[in-house]
Image (tube, rainbow, N blue to C red; front, side, top):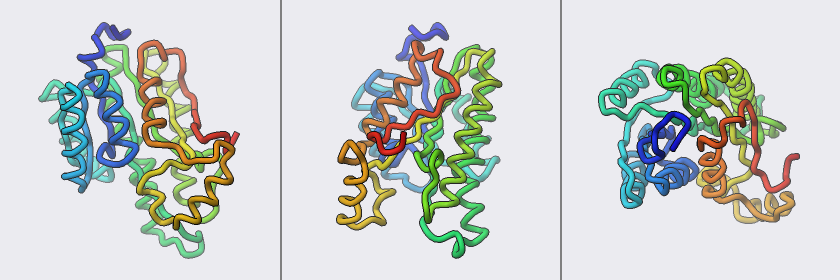
Length: 252
């Protein structure tokens, strides 16, 4: 039974970018507890449906919803649809992200704006839309999937690092704002995770990366998902405003 008075099986979680590697693993981890799952996606319709099928096989009630995180009107329609379906999220996982690799000297203003719009503004708009329901029931969880580069910065990933650094500061500030209402806000800032986002690296580059990490390997999406799940549990209610980085000892 959650602090909200709801059994876990009646708790709803919305995962943005739920069709991807980390997002899909997060959805399946919550589905293993038979929570209600909302999988958000933008264009990856078939991938979202495949994640949904796996979650339904675990016994969860599942919805898939498409919306562009850069467009408030689309997000508003998504929120209205969830409310009409009785699937307003008790837990919001702001997981959707956009990466960009390249020298700052070559970065266009449009590329900068796009990374910021998805990673930072999308987190802001989703939190703003879904937190009133959590506040009204005096219980909720907002978990932002950030990055180790938001803590330490990465060469050739200035826009991405800046956007995730913004997510980390957003997390700390909103946690203080919502704490009196029984809503916690935390961020998970993974190190290198074996997903399609590392697809621009050759296999020898991946091996070099693994050698830099004290654990000697990349993280699996499931390892990130287990931390997100832990932060969403009722018993994690005193963990608030934290940036937790599962990175194998890479950045301490």
